Image 1 (spheres, rainbow, N blue to C red):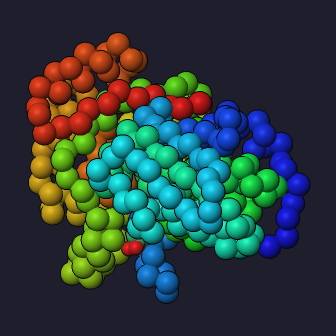
Image 2 (image 1 turned 135 degrees about the vertical axis):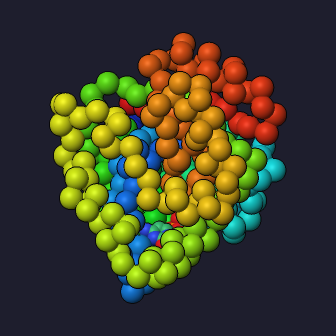
Length: 312
Ligand code: C5P
């Protein structure tokens, strides 16, 4: 790997902050405002079209040098793996090996983003680790090089390497372009049932359903023609909210569909599942309105509820 000098785009990235003995990186969650799944690829993944939104719900990653030569994960979350199963661990391992770094690091993850919810928490942590170690080990990698590492770790990791509040994702999800469909911050109530959804399992269900249907057109390839590629000033949120995976996730987990109905019953007409679930979000006018609805929804003990906005 050729070493390139430190790029300005990363220097100006407010998510990355130098601290004594290390670096702190803000690790945001994402919502998919639009998600259409296209064909299955020879590598087993699916081509897709999506609009990612980075939201203010976030984890915090602190990376510090420690004696020795190993990677250690520390976290306050019981749902997060502490070893090689953690994407942040894998990110560190990748850079450590490629750059022949012999130094120890501890990666502390203050976890707020629920796991297995379609909010990209693990992917975001991996991207934050790439960003943080690039800084800590002075690797001088530009965002395009970091993006290559990101794509090797997972389909959603690349989005979080870029510093874009809104972006269009294509190919496996790792091809990213900034998107400016909405100029104003969006506000959401995000609800998560106590349920971990396996993304791989949902994609398998989709493949099966498509095989049975035997006709791709029933799965809305038409929709892609209207995919909000560039965005426009007159775009309304309700024109783009769509998630192809809702149908299959709802079938396997009817409680997720019920959750969407519950949001609508609270007056949130524009509601959608994120990624492969289990999180469902509703659009609200602002923080105040969001907090009001969140208070009502929190009466249900089985739900995690957050109010979040576009993280600009
Ligand atoms: O890339 P990532 O590890 O996040 O993907 C998890 C799983 O979701 C993959 O193993 C694959 O089954 C499915 N997937 C897919 N096509 C994509 C993204 C994910 O089939 N574009």
